[in-house]
Image (cartoon, rainbow, N blue to C red; front, side):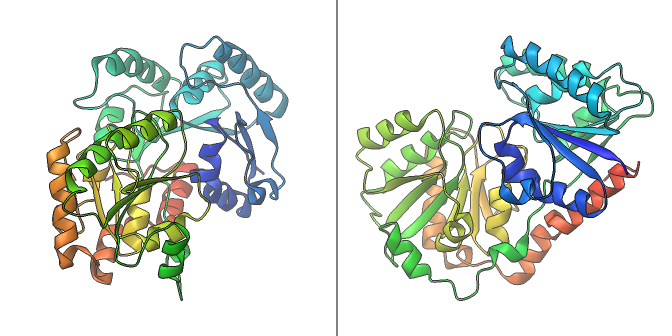
Length: 377
């Protein structure tokens, strides 16, 4: 019976993205445990699997001295538990863990990169800080898994452990059946948020941080509010910029046009009550919420970053625009608002655009990785 340890910087990553992966491995007979900074309670379904949860003091800030303690913790965990595979996620925990366990020759280390922090057109500081770190840590990695073509091309240039290999999979997997709601009371759900049936709703599902770039949509909404008072934006999520974003909304007089609803557990309902789902990130590994919206037949819009442009066909199911191009963002909203063809995606278009990203296909790719095979393009 093989033992696997899943490692993330913070526990919310487990809850939001990795739960079905862990459930699938346990169903196959693997022993799976988790090491993470437990900033949020782990999902009860995960805990119900009987896994061990190791609370490790990973910090999101790469240079925090607390990561040295996390390094020592990871060595002790591996010494006591002797895992066959350690599967790391998120940049800081991944680097710290790979450094800590780099000399363990009997251990296989897998790293899923959900989006390198350096990217084409990105700030120089990201390249100076993260590129050398990822290149170095690759030498302690047996399999480097990427989720978009740009990162895959970079990963293939890294030198991995002897016999190691980079591969690409299609994200973390979308559970389509969970997002298609039968007998959905759209009007009732909108009413609970203070939205009317006639409102045109733009939904943003993202942490309130600098990278997610909510200000781009806020500024676009300020251009549109006079002509289209029925266009409403809904921000679902919490984060360090909550106060700043509220201040921007107030300063631009958008209190009736942009609402912040905080962290939500009814994401499926929010997607189904919306007209379009948007991401305005400066850096995006793929964009799971956009794929979730697509399987619900919703239009999508996003900044032209490496993740969204991987699957958005311009004019077919969504629109891309440049980062910080507020005018183009406003025009995109106006175009979708005015055009009936954007309002509903056909089942054929949904299937063609999203099938490879479905959970069952991603799990099949991961299982091949665990069996020693890499899935390539």
